[in-house]
Length: 199
Image 1 (cartoon, rainbow, N blue to C red):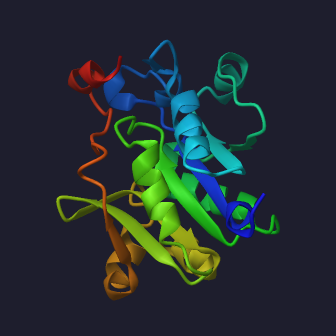
Image 2: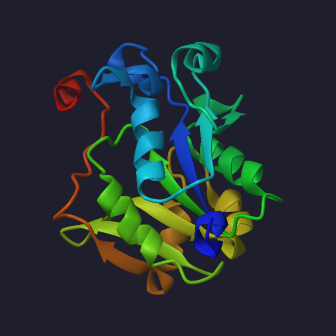
């Protein structure tokens, strides 16, 4: 394992309960015959992330039972109903002390984000002060790479469904932007209509 592979950990936020999807946990939505959470982990691994932490919430016991996630650190977020911010905090907290110097954050409900897009963002990592974001036709999206120097401040500002958004907005000038619109699509699976994106 190279130094960079060891330093950059993949972090999947997969705790959502799918409120607008009739209460189907997003992690368990079927995509290409397997749960969506497996797809997200596979995308990070294909992009070179050896270490992957997965934050679970809604029906976490069922996700653990049905999804095959070998080698992943599974992190339970008991506060998942408070929104994505609580999952980001739980994920970053789980990486403390692991030797990881950056977290590459991917949302479970964005299967259109390709391994190539993730690899591009990952390749922009320089040190633990890094802030990197994919953009789609110039609009910031996921994945986002958060250097460890920012984790405490990101966690402190992560509330509700905002995740790192407020922190990134406040540090706009420090973000390395990586255009990914040519290799990925950044749609979310949020509503019944969005299910058409799944295969």
